[in-house]
Length: 135
Length: 280
Image (cartoon, rainbow over all chains, first blue to last red):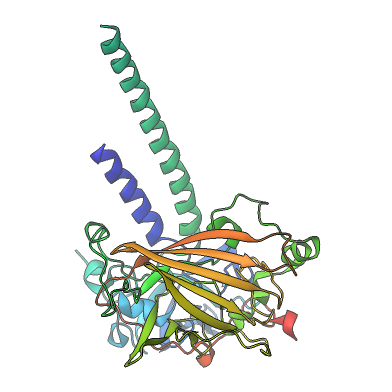
């Protein structure tokens, strides 16, 4: 029974850690669940502001055209409580990110994951910087 | 011998039931997880650390006057996406009058005033911590302030504990007029004077200015806060509604943080819509 309870607890834990990150407003009205992109660019700025934290990344296409992606996350308070801070990602850093595109304004995305190209370290994950450090 | 056979048989049946329930639950959880992962894999909304499970059944701390300390901070304890389901009712059990059901069905989540940074009001609770602050004076606890990290538009809710009555000339407001009293270890908050602007949930469940709510808060152990919640609104409901919500205690070192929702609210732009169009 103890094992079964542990299995259930693990199941619940995984679910609890993966519920949608947007609480202040819904996902479906703004973002396209069928348009998931992975891109590489340079961080222009990071806004630790409410109600949602945002990372702006300049992405240059093959023709040299630069598009600034505005990537929405959960609240900055939530990210801080997991141990992340302003020094973990700063302007000028090259990053690879995965995002759902905006339904109408494509370059306004709902951020799924983001990591530094320099060390492959994934940022802003549950558990904080220590949990996401390269093993 | 027969008894032993029965015992063995029931043990097998019990085992099958437990395994079946476990498989069914995990299947449900994993399908939910897949849907959630489809959306996002970074930190979830809220992400607020709760106390450890081993501490949930600990003793209830007491205020100097002997009443249970309901301060918190807490997570949950109210409605969020669907008051009917979250309050413990089955689909369709909420006794909405036809016009109110029609209004709920046509409302769109993005039009909720809360998305435009207006207050959540009662009993809406988002996935961020909240707490009760007891104002202790030489006359005892004269007020309780209820603070949500996000959702009050910079305002606060006050519950008067000094024995006053509701005024008879209230102007409708987001939090109405709340008076509280203790019934044993249960804090009873009676509120009238609400406006009809806020929604009970992001689904759009409505109410009218006739709304009268009764919240009965109790703390059965260290880690749990129960909110037995009554909706009395003859303007939108055919009868009084009784709901139940449960909050969990947030970890001791977690403090409420500054959260000014209007600071940088860009909701709606990616989807090409204006906020709060119902109110415009």
